[in-house]
Length: 178
Length: 284
Image 1 (cartoon, rainbow over the protein chains, first blue to last red):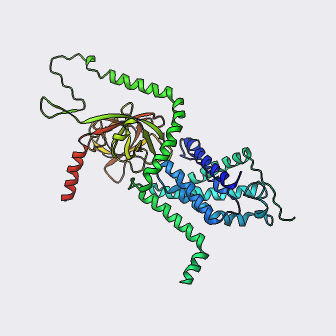
Image 2: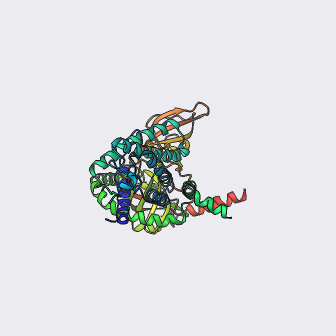
Image 3: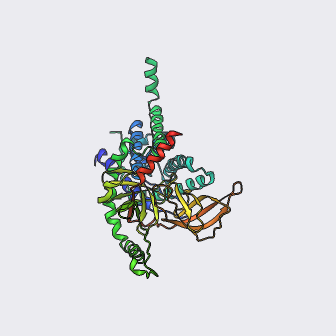
């Protein structure tokens, strides 16, 4: 599958999964929503230009917002993690030239589960914090915001691990040496 | 000039990031006020179509519950039939939803039109319900929505051809005029954004005699809902220390988790009342 087709299919599947499955789950007391759709941004290739990543992030967030009839919240959060992602990749990539050897971030290309989870966890925390901060502007309750952010991040991370276990993305080792 | 271009090229990513963030925040701030934004209607049409396809599947799984609530609504209507009552004398007074101008002609003031819920949420900060159906073309913004058992649900905010978006009572901007059925004090029903099915009633003076379990109905002061539609029952009574008002937690009578059919209330006097109010505000 070419990159374009793969991206479009993933985009649609993540939006549908988020809105029709995960958004229907509500834990009664905490009002925690499990978020997974931003994994789309995490899975974009290393080589993609940052401007494109940000525009795709904006489109992703805006689409989800359209379903929820209040645009802006998810778009802002997605743009933030799309902007931060390359910094984090540079910081986290362990072996020399992993960006060129592998196509996209995964457990294998990041060099183990722990670095990948730190990568995913940081972006997840940023996404949730920014999203809930924008929402809390209107309701305003610091403790509620903190607890909600941390719990949502934990649930999202569990979902990310499950997704990575179920859908193993084959990462071909592309070598530069001939 | 050259320096400006160099600057833009150098910080292109950062500038794009700022631009997109500002755009997002602009949407957040402005969308809640102006629902008729350019993209609103188009996006609504597309998501509405996807939602109605999805609802065809989801609806199947809720048939039993929907049927139960329709049976209950039917029962309530049967019990209101005139034939059920034995009148002690010939003077009967029926006041339903019509207004008598003189003794001969009757004017319809309210009309109930049904619609199918295609999308509904309870667990966000701002919840919306999307409705579809043949009657949607007659709907206009700021019409009240009730569920099949005559409980208040929300107010229409946006209409686009085949779909209408309803601001659920579980929304931070939702303000509905409520009234205590027993004593008649009025207040405002809002939602604090924490737990679905728990609403807040504020503005009830401490002089009011209230007990847990009292019914709160719509006051009829706003044109969204006619008087007497059940909003909820009192669950918890807190007295505010600094003011002379109570803050009351209500358990909403509408089951927001399970909405399949709703009715929109067309108030034929709405326009007239609003025109009068507008005139009044212009004069002041």
